[in-house]
Image (cartoon, rainbow, N blue to C red; front, side, top):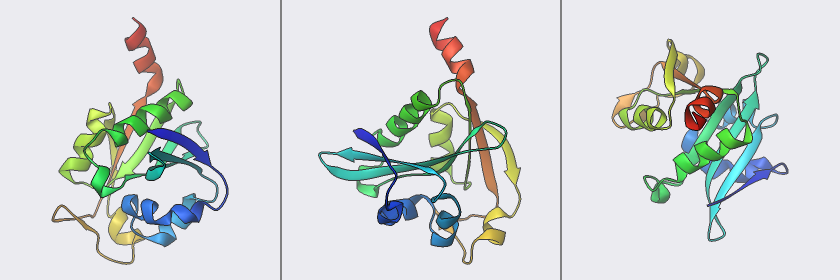
Length: 155
């Protein structure tokens, strides 16, 4: 997969972004100031990731998505590894819904549970969000300290 940064007309990737965050108004909160990365296979855009810098110096993953027909083939993990290489020695944070496959994906990428934001989805989205038969209510927050990984990998 080839990964590139996109700066102009980020909204043209809305169909992919909506896979990771199904409400356009929420995407509009982070996309304009966020860094958008797009992954392509054989010239076809199949994955996106939006990151932003937090005031405390951490990196936030606001959105990561892979086309459904390409999911389960390692492209999401490849995107996560690429992001980590772009921001070495950083703490990376993200929030997600509480579905088994999503939680397992982030754990497999080396992220650890940080905290829970109660009622995030019910308070911030204008409709019920259901994934894997589960109604999303709380946001589950994860983080990963890539500096720890670098020390572990080299030692």
